[in-house]
Image (cartoon, rainbow, N blue to C red; front, side, top):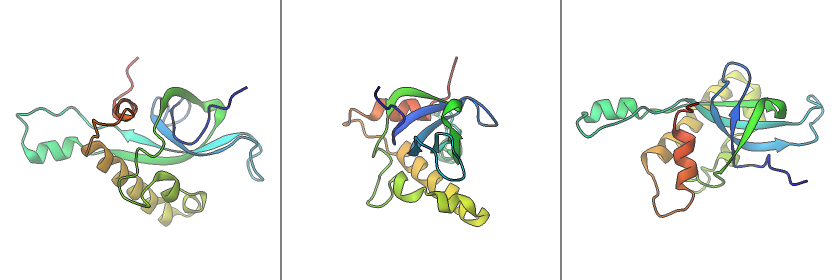
Length: 151
């Protein structure tokens, strides 16, 4: 059987405070590890999606409505739903700003580093949202990631 829970897969969280929110798998642990013996994944996602923007809005209003709120979390595989979209390498604007280089488990363990990590992830997501790349075939996956889930 093919493994689909790989780094870069866009998933939807099913349980907890962020149920219904979209996230990207940064690192996966299929066998679990010492503290957590169940399969789980380290995910980074969008807490609050950017709102719709029109031409008539002022620059100040556009900037305010284009903000992205991010979160980073470790989630059990039972609580995530994989989608058909993958965004591997799509959030790498400049060298070293890829999600797998920014998001680590060590940074999640401490409160101060966790807050700094959230700010870095928010910056990466906002930068990617504000500079769409229409030449790539991966842009529909990024568009799906930043849209509010409607069902």
